[in-house]
Length: 482
Picture 1: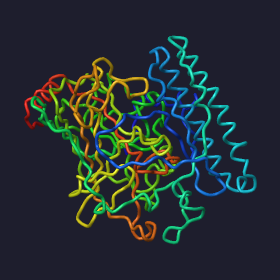
Picture 2: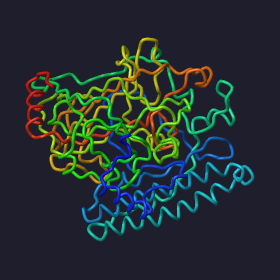
Picture 3: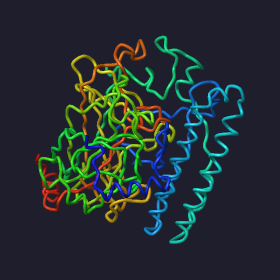
Picture 4: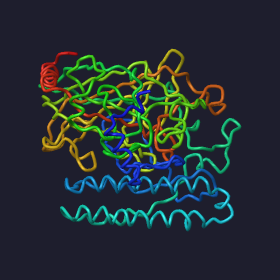
């Protein structure tokens, strides 16, 4: 399996990271990513707010919801970035430990309703406050110290949807337990009304399309790193990713290594990395990562499903021409924490073949016989013209206006990546809670309950200049190219 293949130097870096306390112990049940992802407002998907608290953990399924510190850091000086990244990773670990204690303290909580508050949430707030203070100090040494971060220290206990249905409620004769998914997370796609709308193309629009063919992860390159949101942090994603394109993907890969690496893309001028959380069948199968961080040790279990088809298209702008992306541009779409963060940055799009004018954000679709499951991710297509990344991984890129297709003022239109993943998976059986035909679910942080709204995707542009210019010319002249 490629998931454990590492250069010797990177193995050493991982050991250092683990020694520094950045990686969770093998017994961890959960971790929370402090980074939010880019905002989606263009697909017309139906969404709803995450379940609201406060919750009483003695009453049923409860999760921990913490303010997203990383999303608030819109400006971090370069000299402070390494320390800030480490402190943000430490926030992950603190919440992970608190959630593990919450999950293992059922008896104590039932005997003392104040246990969760006094023994778990109050100490968590204290630890987060100290870490957040170090973040502010690190930024203040090289720039303006951010104000108000201390207000982000306190977390809350939040009821999950299962709890809102009633304590101990049963679905198909089985009490709602675990960290999801549940039958209520699924809906018959044939009952969903068409909801996809696109801005009308204007004269001068860039109407072409460029397709890059990079396979479906036949090489089985998996890991639970995230080079964009947690560079230099082992297991920074806390869930397992599929990778296509660049074959040197882990937390320690440099831009120079990306440029020199092999690629699974048919056109060798595309060494970009495309990655997304794996989809798993909740069938009890022990995968290669069943005991590992990012996998079973953090609640991500079952058979990993490889997409039957992966389509990577770059399309234009409905109002005008596009410009080339800068090399090593990093884009994240969606929010892996949308269940507790809310829907502001959610960009999940779930559907079925033959029904793709009906897209779901907060539900998994149940596809009719002969129809396949589809995950679609549309990436931001407006760029600030300067940066390849930003402190919160969002502000350097943006979506176009969903009605007009215009970029925000001061931003330039770039080719939009549209990633489409097709899976041949049997429809789950909702009447018996997935017993006769198991549920499927996207990998994620266990406190997010494997909700469909947490789906997300990541892209790093490593096209060579010649091929990128060809893409732009193709799109701007209205042609279809590969």
